[in-house]
Length: 248
Ligand SMILES: [Zn+2]
Image 1: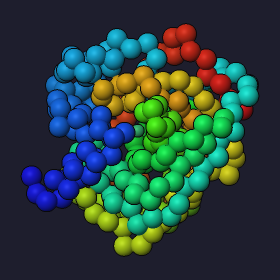
Image 2: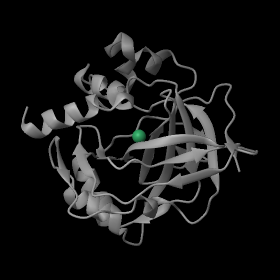
Image 3: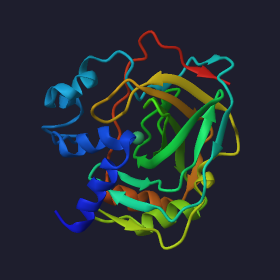
Image 4: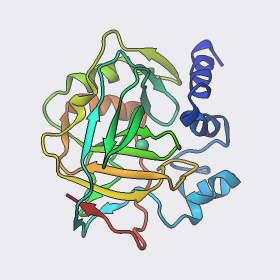
């Protein structure tokens, strides 16, 4: 364990909302495929039980959505020279500058954002190449994640900067200059909202999901750079069960 790893763990411990994630990191080993893969998560630890027995799990296929008043989402994210962490499961930008979002009048603080390939959610059964998750929390620890589908296309300066800095092995690096996280927002405000879970162990059912319908474009070479580190880090689709998928 080098200095980077130690600084990373201490940083998480200093953030109350991230404490659960820190415990998960030091807890049972888990992967997407193989012996400790997605089908086994619920058996790896009693803390991971929700992964196996939960009824409001994520991700889901965003289909048969019901038009509804899903509350206004306003983001107040600020540019920052993020610490970029390879945590063994994804590339994550840790947020140090206090900023956040309001959803239906409730205030949330932005904690971190990270990426999956392929996308975890699907739109009418179809996944895209990648998905970004902006993880927010309120003072009670309720989570609100803003998600965007990502597809190959025009270059995306901010995602390119993150992939250029991303450590190839577990560890952390700091961006050489600030980037604006708002660059990850699509033009269209068309959005899905539903109640779900973390898509990684411990799969806690505490997440208010808000996913934009319009994919954003990033360079194919930056998707390839991500896949070189994490060829597949998406949980399979989970049953919607009794939940409604809402859209604005
Ligand atoms: Zn995620």
